[in-house]
Image (tube, rainbow, N blue to C red; front, side, top):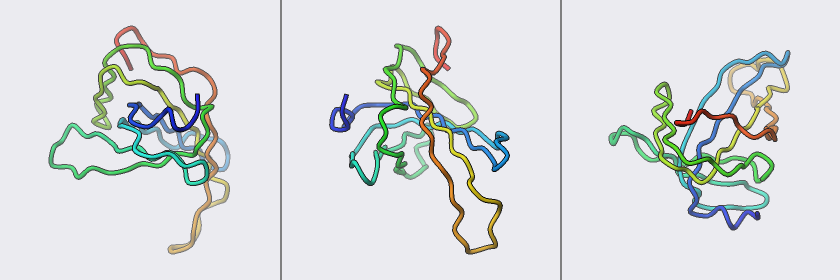
Length: 127
């Protein structure tokens, strides 16, 4: 697989955020369709929302294909985030690690994106 093959494909993206001690801070889930790919800037996904009043947004993930896995057929619904997608092409998971303690207001925080290279485990009917 190469980056260009992802254009127009659908995906469910899971992101886990960890603090500087490696403790899980939060997990989020998104779904959408790949709009553009760039080997330096990343993979841009147009997010889907179940709420029609929510403006479409783009989400950019690093251009590393190690986190992308073919999705088994099914209905993927995640109530807390509103993610609802049927038969996506890919499942994508990232672990994002804070690399420094909290910074004062207005100063940039640094995070390291690490691809989760283990195939996501999903139930028979989705996540």
